Length: 162
Image (cartoon, rainbow, N blue to C red; front, side, top):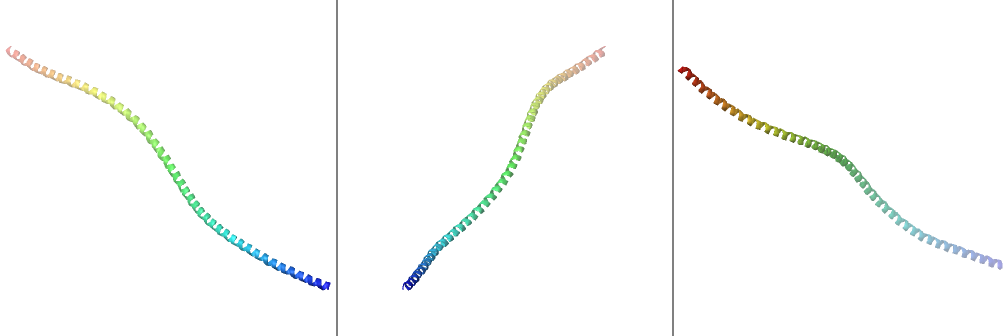
């Protein structure tokens, strides 16, 4: 009976171990299934977050591309305006230099004009004096001619009397 009892105990023990292993496997399977569900759920949430981040990243990239394009356009405009500014500035400086030269020339011409006006006034005064002298000389000539006529008449009268 001891062998049969042992066989029975061993069989019961083996049965008990098999039942414990089956229950353990079932428990482990349930635990792993819950863990898998949690991991799967967590994974899906992470995937959703990653997809949102990718979408947001794409939006930011598009904004960055647009901003980069606008910056490039602004830089081109700035370069163009800078070139135009330099051109206008050099033209302005040239115009100012020309203006200064023209102003100096104008001042010289004004001085020459004033000198010429002074000379003209002097010549006019001299002309007036010469005209007055001419009038006086004409008057004197006329007076002399009148006197000559009188003298001739007197001479003819004297010759006619003699």
